Length: 170
Image 1: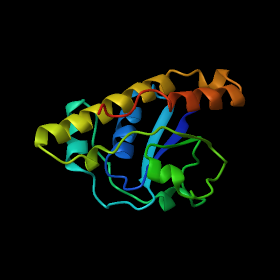
Image 2: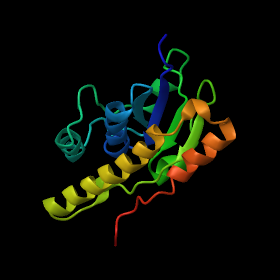
Image 3: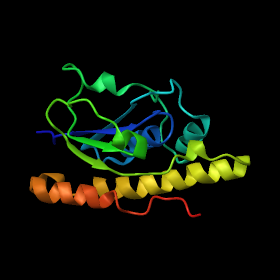
Image 4: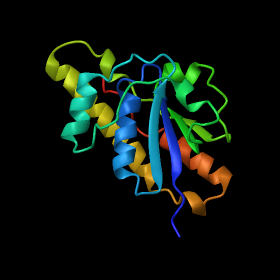
């Protein structure tokens, strides 16, 4: 008998960096009981090259990663989500579609590494930090005993993960 796989959707406005990196990290570290997807409210249509570079350098697969609209997951034929996490403040403030099955939601803010301007080293540092913060939160999430927690406790734990460090030092 196979263990249930929980579907997780990471949302961001552009679906070009943070949500894409989160999808790649969770699919690599999801312990076979978590499957990740990503989408954006206003997708840019392409994945940021530094996001792909960081994902690849971390040893995660970039296969199949692409920028897409959250509408792709709001129709009845889409995979039913168990969790939906916003990883940017813009997406958290937008009116999201009604997700079939009423998944558990939380906001895990990560500053946008694609918004960092400056030298190549400064931009890469921003992407490295975003990967680190996402990895820490996803690690905490993937280690939760999802099936062993009641819904209220699980919601509290998922929201607490969103309060883990995730801002760039100023």
